[in-house]
Image: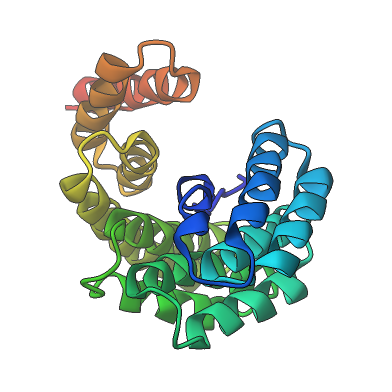
Length: 240
């Protein structure tokens, strides 16, 4: 199973860059707009070229965040990590921007094999009053726990298989935190249902899958998992 950790794209930040009192923000904003269009089209290299032009005119934290994000999309994790670190350490970075970029900083850490450092950043973000998307931090922490659990579950060692349940249980708690904050967080509901399935909590998994399908009836992974859940529920009924 491939996990997709939530990485925030800074499209919403791009068009406020002209408000920064930097060298030439008015000229930079045109390049930012071009970078935005290229990014939305998936042309990350062209977007980065435009972002570099904007950054050369206005090296503000928000344009730096855009550039660092595009570097991540191009899998240039070392460069992206270094730039995000620079943004975080910059005293001129707005406090909410600093908190927002920490999520992406953690994603870079994870891609570079620094899992425990990433975990700590996300844990800190769940308590950061300036971070506007704590559900994302809870979700990413949940994915980390779930991936750890799945890795142990696949081991031949019985002790590791047993210990995997602790990871699944922790991931379930984190996904629950995410949906408590954001009731329309479909990915969190889905992984919550998977974790519950792994823990044989079939009725609870079914309830969460039905929530997903009530919002997105065509959600195929939820449909497929619901069939498996119903089969397990039927087996339990037949065995009693």
